[in-house]
Image (cartoon, rainbow, N blue to C red; front, side, top):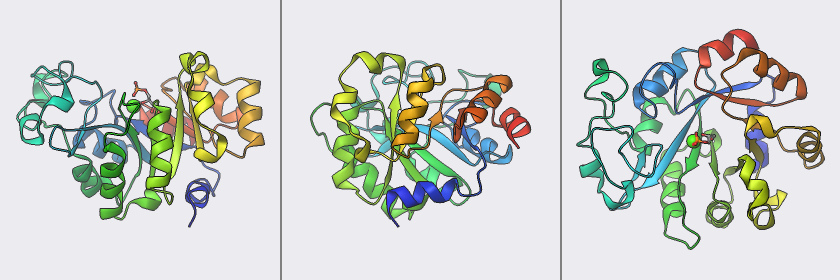
Length: 254
Ligand code: G3P
Ligand code: CA
């Protein structure tokens, strides 16, 4: 199956796909197994998560480039080994009742929810030059037989450009925020480098819809927690909604 076929199959029954943004992150600590499991319970079709390479070349799920905001530790993610990262509490910052939750690895997420959810793997990397992250991500996806259930995305166009030849069988989502229009992203990637467009929701206008149609790319948009906005985006033809509140989106989009 080609990457294009993989994504087309996800959308073949014409549902708008609901991806829990960092899991069901409105309700429980983001980017934890609990958040991903809750998204599945709430009826999400998939989840979005943020992955970083650890110092010892494993893959840890955490949003920021430091652990300061979502754990009881401090410091840069990539300066720490997996064992070090596993020592921190990734739940108390949200609520004391979640004390003891750990940052998961990408493997642990695949093992926990890979059989029931599509996984949007956002690679968080600022590297312009290759540092091996893409190979480690591709190997993990293959090892867990997740090729047909994963889309790899990134704001870093260099990451996506490198990922394509490393894993030509895998689907890629081109992640864009409003500032992308003024930077060099759009000169690095061409439509043959990705299968889906991941626009921030307020970027979607007639030009973006026409571009997506012309190049036959589904749009997955983020982060949509407002039901009226979700309905408007659905009416415009958006195919995927990335949300902190999968339960609300399920109610309104089903
Ligand atoms: O993948 C969409 C969205 O997660 C990108 O922004 O900052 O939430 O990782 P951010
Ligand atoms: Ca993200």
